[in-house]
Length: 520
Image (cartoon, rainbow, N blue to C red; front, side):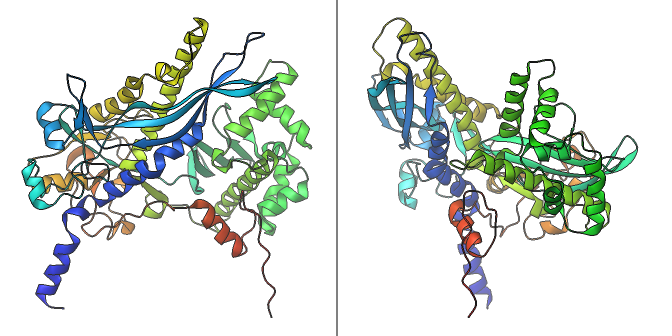
């Protein structure tokens, strides 16, 4: 390959579309699929109407959502197309109206359900990324961009809020729903810990399975103070017999020996007894019925939430949770026996990157919940005053708009994170490109974190080895390598599960095992 060929390939690779492509692909996926997924998760808005005797229940059903292209409402009430340069000059937000189908439904219980009002209504405004599919300049030619005052060389990939250009920083985080085993020094002793960040629908729960100095396994997870005995928890989930528990952890003689120690120290022998013991921990001093109810709620809601599957039987989900905990226990024992090394948190296989679309999905989820609470309040208020219930009067579009625009304008994101959105560095053209391809670690700047700041071998070809700031941010703020390609999440999770089942993988939630054809 001669020099001219290499130059042509390089020029094509680093074209305007590719420099911020990871932002565009992520944000377009959010608009095309992610928003509807969040709405489908919510599905309905329940109200307290119908609690009184003789009153008909009322709830709101959510339907399809769509985003148009950015518009601006003028003083005379007319609405016109908005271009990025106009938004910059007028200090307004480059945002598009969002419409959603909503239906107010009355009845249920004894009465037949009926639709009181059903319509597509404007629920707010969504800031739109410059250059994305919903951007008004998407697909414009070089000359058309110059005619409307845009820079043809501008890479896009940022938002305009109140006239300011804001870029969402790609965030680095540990991979969710993955078991990581490591040794930890606790109270002067070295103990083995298997942990997983269980994540589902925006909720993230850290589940720890640790082997204490006596060699007994303990599990800790949100909403339960302290640790719970491993065998007690597994029995509460439905694995009752000693043989089944040991078999699910491992058939290795050394590990079986460790497990027998745990079984001998177990306080309870039955599933009912285990749930009672758990109830005493989570609702101490309460009545027995409440304790049982609370114990069941806690293990269904807060323990390994990523294993929940819509439409899958609750008992099956609990058994899957027990199997998962047994796998975590096996990781602890293997680490104690020296059969495996501790997982490297800085290895890039154990990390995931949150790009613009993922961050906007988190933001939209909290904004929709806020809107749902407001719709509930407005419905109950209108009902109390005996007014006609209609979608247009109970939806206040500024509620959603404010919740979407404010975090982008300030950088203060949901979950207590700050600095997620930053002003685009317009020092020069290379500064803009560098800013769009930057990523940040969630670790504290004030702590040493020597290993996290080091250049890891797995960053080769992914992260630039030299472009990082000096001072407290050194090694925590990084930049993508020039030819980096960022893969997006799997398009269809169900198809992937069916493929695995067809290969003979058993125990996949929500998928029945497929019989393997006999060999000829």
